Image (tube, rainbow, N blue to C red; front, side):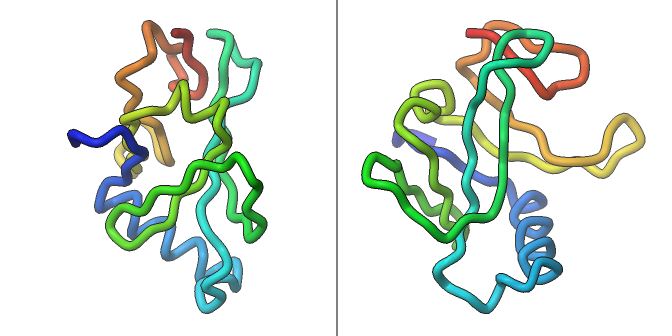
Length: 114
């Protein structure tokens, strides 16, 4: 990972593809994965993630492993070089962000500080 971007692990990609199929948007190429950062959570900032098909003028667009990942410019400043991961282990099931910019994160892994 040398470029400034947002990345996705193989396991997270598999889950995103599965969820897109479940949501009925897998066949529609206009849909992409939108990730972002919002204020809140026990460490100050929280991650958000959803499927979207409306790109905004200031959006930053990345593609990794065939998945189109879009974020707004403000969120990208917090998410640069972050990798979206997925864990289905006993200690927690779900998506999480492996963010090198976070100075600390909470125990649940859903919020962070820089």
